[in-house]
Length: 196
Image: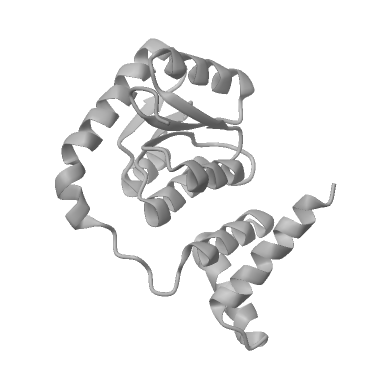
């Protein structure tokens, strides 16, 4: 299905920036999946498994940092940030999360494409040894639990640890397995989403 240089997920809550990036990267030969918020970004990443994600940092709901942490922990997808902010705190967080690049806005597509191409080149050259360094999966945190945690983070503005603790407390209170509780929560959200 891939048509050329690789598959990239682009996430920005500014529709104009998103359209510009999507068009420019598609013209450069990438298969582009786009989202204008963090929740959609995570769902699309799970479905399409892009090779790289280009994330805006400050968005309503889940931030680019939230999405990046999810991509790193559960999908092992590398990411780069695009942001208008370059303060010390932001830069420190970018380094902590392990972004492959950090691009400061305003940027034009001619600056972004080479950075994306370099990230793809680095990923491919590192692919062989990287397989041996697969991140250690967290015990009992399967994808369903991770999705439930993401839902709680978004709905109640919690960080990942708080959301997981809330899910664990709920499953203990109701005497259910964590995965079972996660499934119930995700199914409830899907059910609510289907009622238009």
